[in-house]
Image (cartoon, rainbow, N blue to C red):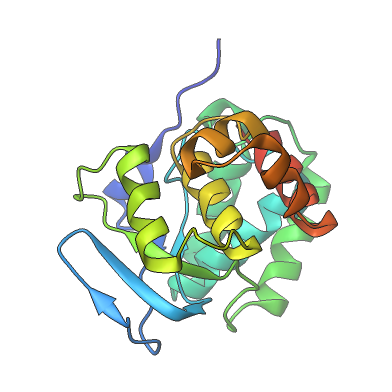
Length: 202
């Protein structure tokens, strides 16, 4: 049985692990979502889905984001070790202490600048109350589905992943209202690789 993520431990210590864009201003802002016509890299939303950390690379990225969002790195060393401990439900693997210490020191050396992030065009608020189908309907209206492009497919993949579900061509075709062949035809090699990476975390 999968260990439940001990997110309350972070909340009790007021650790920041979510942040909406600050410099980038939304093209459209409602009570349910924010839409960025040119996309934004400033949205950080860790632990929003049931997906766990499955690789060293992903663990380090989570640490870099936490370092960026929080200030006191001496305190964060303890947080990093807590998250890296499989027993606390954030990761799917055990990591040796020596390797973890090296990773933490490397994060502190690199930390400070905004970590590389995925571009987002539509950011739904936690209190939106929207279902996955409703979210995809809004994305379709904002980005447009008459011409299925990589941005629409990518947003669909992110929404499915945020919902804690496996991304499949069939599932995407149903949500996007197109044939599976159309989805296949409009997916680049990079998108297919991203699909695999996102599924590995679910």
